[in-house]
Image 1 (tube, rainbow, N blue to C red):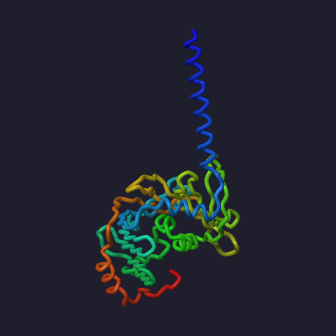
Image 2 (cartoon, rainbow, N blue to C red):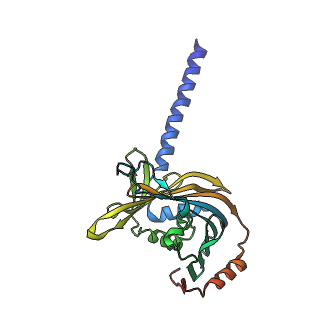
Image 3 (cartoon, one colour):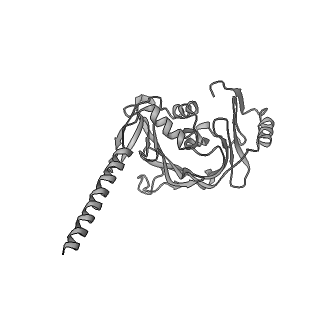
Length: 279
């Protein structure tokens, strides 16, 4: 009897310790941060230096209607509008994106190397804006503060305001940016991974459509977390999905080959080449 009582006391202590430990862990995970703290945590969690990534992009008709004239519950995929990408990235220095069709033919070439910038569409029937091809997650997760701030500005996030964000499903996130402006990012408060980017597309008459980029299915490769799937929404409707098919860290990028490609394309009529001293 005495032995049973002592065992019960010991189990009670272990159970109480477990509760205290879990509470302390949760409190630490959601401990308030300021901008500098968050930038430090994001920098610390980027382990890649150079990477080559291959993705497949599906495009959807977000506003397709059914026979009754109502919006379809499921977006209709447009296979002919899909494309592939090969991304070459060296943190803080190089970003080169080769956008290809299903047959591997080059549709668009984006070249960013230090202060040199080239963007060229190679098919007159399929032009791409820079916003269409940039790997947002890679740019924002850079270990370099100036690159990270620039990437945030590209999606309209200028405010350094940081706060908790309680979503409708009762999940808690860190919110970076101004909620009222509609330009903000949500981050996992434990891992500081990007969960979503929010923006507004302004229309005539002062109205707007909400845009959202969602990063999901996170996995880890070479000590670095990254989302396998990135989905793009316009007014709550899916219009694009990017899936990472292959990824590999490199000791060096094939810069000679990539530079030669850029120089061959620089004289095309629809190419833009400039020295961008804001990079």
